[in-house]
Length: 112
Image (tube, rainbow, N blue to C red; front, side, top):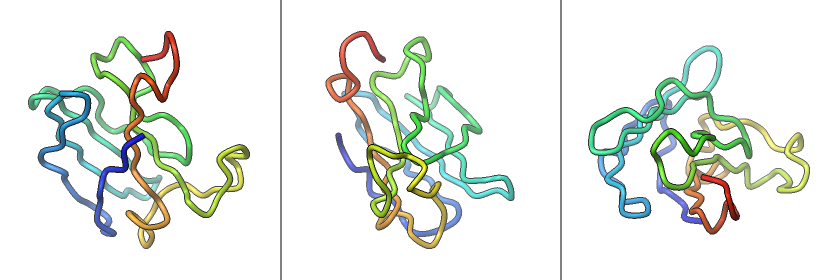
């Protein structure tokens, strides 16, 4: 698992991050209905407008063309009981709420 550094602001773009050899751009933004993510590889959209929830995979599907997955982790919640953590929001981004890249090794066999 790799922690992707983010700022504690409601809207941000991570313009260039290498994840498993993939040239990625990540947009994170707050709406009235939650916190959302867009993911691009080589400027091609992989997912857009995906809600971010504690311990839920953001990409979630192998066929999307992304190796691995992204997930937010609430450091004040439990990794075994997801309902004890809160969904990401500001304040707390980058400190309490961590954006994690999960490699195929982290995900296990047969999972993208």
